[in-house]
Image 1: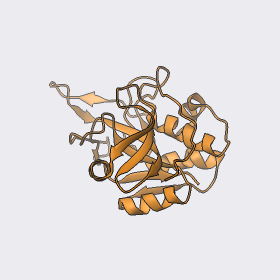
Image 2: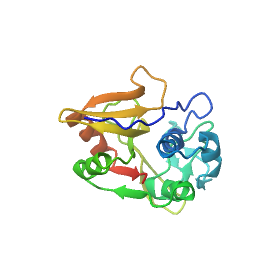
Image 3: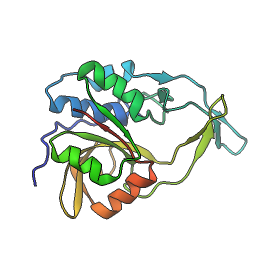
Amino acid sequence: MNLLEIPYTKQRPELPSGCEVTALTMALSFYGVSVSKLTLAREMPMDQTPIARDEDGKITVWGDPEDGFVGDPFDNGITINPRPLKQLADRYRPGSLALYGEAFPSIESHLTDGRPVLIWFTIHHELPIERSWKTPAGKTVPAPRPLHCIVLTGTDDDYVYFHDCESTEKSGAHVKAAKEHFIRIYDAMGRRALVVT
């Protein structure tokens, strides 16, 4: 098994909520594209909808990650989905694939072909807690937490390997998770991925 030699970058301290652009920075650098995570954070599409909470602190209204990053990657933010993140990736390396609902073997085939894949995952590599809110237009946004974005570096029969840009005890370069467990989290997080080609 060959792991992709993707340069590793941490998201903190500059981007406490900027895991997607940090993962994209790593994937682009694999191809020799030199762009900083801070540049990508400033350039990515944004949804500027302000957050609204009920009296219990539960989020009731916020933005739509299909439109752009919800919140502030430099502070309190949540995520951006593959489609708008692809728009950013394509500025530096055209042809990325925003994937929704693809079973993991499809993701694995891209990785086997030597392409880095960003996966929407969880911070502590555990199954997510369900959550949702409404956009101002009334669309329900599923937002399981604690959301994270990682970049895959390889797989074998038993494990999935990835760069995790957070600063927890489970973060780092070429971290591994049991494949069956990994796939359960990937499925629970909505099967979202971005293949950087």
